[in-house]
Structure formats: C-alpha cells, structure tokens
Length: 144
Image 1 (spheres, rainbow, N blue to C red):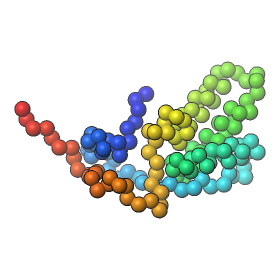
Image 2 (cartoon, helix red, strand yellow; image 1 turned 120 degrees about the horizontal axis):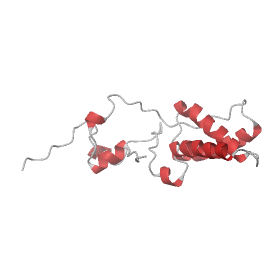
Image 3 (cartoon, rainbow, N blue to C red; image 1 turned 30 degrees about the vertical axis):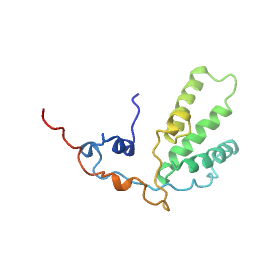
C-alpha cells in the first residue's frame, strides 16, 4: 500500500496541488481522550488507560475518533487475553486489525512520523505558515 503524504509535507516539498484537495476538508481539533466507558471490561479499561496518554501526547485523538479508539482498545485487549488454543487465523486477523488501528493513531514506529496530528485548540500558527500558501495552484513550468 502506498504511503500517504500529509498536506503539510506536500506544501513544504512544493508538490501540493489544490485541485486534488477536498474543497472543504474537516479540520477537527485534538482533544483529550475521554475516560473509558463503563461498558468496557476490566481488561479493556486497563488497555484504554495505557493507550490514552500515548494518543493524547501525539495529538491524534479527536472527538470523531471515539469509535475507532474504542475498537482499537477492544482488539488489543482481545489479543492480550487470547487463549492459547485460539485459531491461528483468528489471531492473525486480530493482529492485522490492531496493526491497522495502531497506525491510524500513530502508535507504531513507522506511522508515528507519517501521522498528521490534529491542531490543538490552544496551539498558535505554525512557524512556517507564513511561507505556505495552501490555496494556490502549483506554478507551471516554462515551455522549453
């Protein structure tokens, strides 16, 4: 699967194309992970408590991520408590789902650098924002 390059990285590289960008993309702000729901098991609440501070530190949690984060917690808890006689194919599938969700939140070494964190509500403008012009089309090359 090709690696997705963030909008900011494309802007810094000079490869950003406004015509390929969504007209009005959602811009959710990072927020703290809420306390674990009471409907989770004790094991799932423990996993929630382990993952929540990491996700908050990375700034990858937004209120729209609640369901995905809950699924991540449940899958990791299932893997942690998997019985030794569980079918190998089920374990492999759980590991694939967990790996995918961990990457979405930037919780594995490869995706930590690729995930674009949501802006925090108290965060000022980026130091380089004055040099970037997100809405401008790429300059065309002169004819040779």
